[in-house]
Amino acid sequence: MHNKLWNQLRAQATDDAIYEQAKEYALDYIKSVDDRGVWPSDQAIEGLANFSEDLPETGTDTYEILKLLHEYGSPAATAQTGGRYFGFVNGGAIPAALAAKWIADVWDQNAALNAMSPIASALEDVCEKWVVDLLGLPPGTAAGFVGGSSAAALCGIVAARNHLLRKKGCNAAKDGLFGAPPIRVVLSEEAHSTVFKALSILGLGSGRVKLIAADSQGRIKSEQIPPLDDNTLLILQAGNVNTGGFDDFGAICQKAREAGAWVHIDGAFGLWAKASEKFDHLTKSIELADSWSCDAHKTLNAPYDCGIILCKDRSALTDALQMEGSYIIYSEKRDGMLYTMEMSRRARCVELWATLKSLGRSGAAGLVESLHQKAVYFAKRLRENGFSIPGDVFFNQINVYVGDDDETQRVLRNIQRSGVCWCSGAKRQGKPFIRISVCSYRTTCDDIERSVKAFTKARDEMTAG
View 1 (cartoon, rainbow, N blue to C red):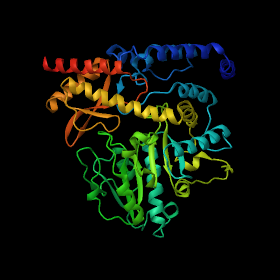
View 2 (cartoon, rainbow, N blue to C red; view 1 turned 90 degrees about the vertical axis):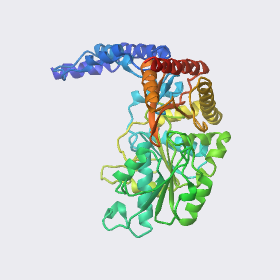
View 3 (cartoon, rainbow, N blue to C red; view 1 turned 60 degrees about the horizontal axis):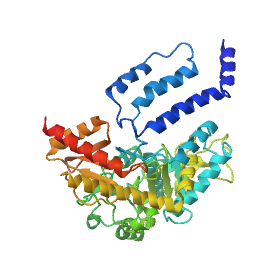
View 4 (cartoon, rainbow, N blue to C red; view 1 turned 45 degrees about the horizontal axis):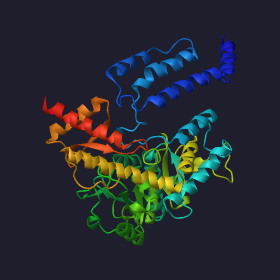
């Protein structure tokens, strides 16, 4: 019985018809995504019950599996690769990168070692050089390719922790934190939740940090930062997750450098603003930090999942993430596992390489400029239609208020149910708001106009009860 199954699977491995069917379904989704409801219909959500079953006793026909995914999975997918998904800072997917991901999925490479995948090793090396160059970071800065900025921040902070402790004569990698001197962590009260999560995981205590107040635009108040020393980890933001505000890197990083403190910049979506000279007023002196975390699947529009940790001191990163084993074959070329927490992981650098290759330097600059222009236009049209948009649109984030707190939340629910567009909500300084993230290259002015009409209709429905 089992031999029959293995023979069947081996035959299917080179069966063109299977992959043609998958391609047909995929292309149908791609071509129809702009016409789909951005949020799945109630019927589509109910259709997910077709996946709820006990594990089959015997295997299911491959065509039946693909049909189930397309018939019931595609309608229940959020249309975040279209032009009217504005939730959670989710970007689109550059065509060359999406196609490259298909090829990479067929390769199914493990990017841990050069000995496992020379192509993954080579493309990681290229991507490291390109990203460092595009962002104007110090030559020799190391890059690790992870699932997202949550993992990237964790890698950067562990490198910072171990480096700071090493200067105090403590080898955290070898001896742990037993008897280690405490590290002082200074960050904004509006730092992203993933940063607090990383601090908690790494034993630095999310509740014992020094929180600094943020101004009305979400930027850390630099004048309230206490004197720094060589026992301090200072965490700044390139793009407040709600307002899009950028901290004053020039004044702050220079003081940190003089004091011997480590600066990590959380730039999940905002770090890419460095690709354009038009945002120099926001990103000036960002290169003075020691480590940076960002997501290529946000502003850069690489497919999910594609996070990056960047560290000026290569050895600080690799020493913190080092692992040994008699079976591990290190090489003179790049061994990707030295720069991440994971050993086994997919070769996500393939689609990052394709994204950067497709855009080029000018395309990357044009992309971030375009997202900003569309966000400014979106905010302008909402204001013209009576919505409250406080502050400036620094980059690609917009905060929207409607009357009082309850009205804002009710309008948000109406928008999310409409299917025309989709936004997430959040709270800042205790006040709820509708949060718009303009992140997809596919968003057009027509998409924005349709979305503004959806906002207006959602408000009218709320008023009508």
